[in-house]
Image (cartoon, rainbow, N blue to C red):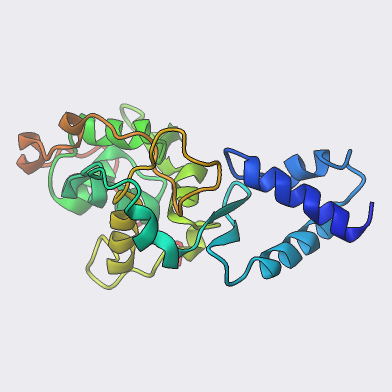
Length: 235
């Protein structure tokens, strides 16, 4: 198989895949006869060939995928003008704290925000597939440690946490991150849409009751017994 034939195979697989494809997945297309470095070179060539079109090839945390170019968003939104799922400020700030200071416990989040984190806020983020418990802190009560997932990076169009926008001094949410979050939840793809992703593809909307800013969110914080460490920013 020559280079052009290999790119045609890659193109077909990527355009029809429902999820980003990792290098290992793509190697199986060729019975592992093409190594990872060669595949990456072919993908870079394919990305260049699609440059300037309405659809682009991008590398994400979990693999490669085709998605609509940002310049197409205005037009594509006209095809599915449904209201986006609405997330409260509590959800946004909790997600940002986990993203920038992970791994963190619920108590860490409460100390940073200065208010109690209601259970539905964490549940909303877990059900959305953006955060998960990755272990427990060795402290009284062994509180769960939360971190973001590859799905979170994929939805924001990022390859790693190093690509998160820098936090400004004294803030918990970077303005650019807030904009990305707003764009991410702004539109919902129609059922039966093409496998080609519309930018950062949202998952189904969650129960709005879990998203609401609950009255408990203004109550005094309840922190974990262990002192909260100064979690460094990944930047």
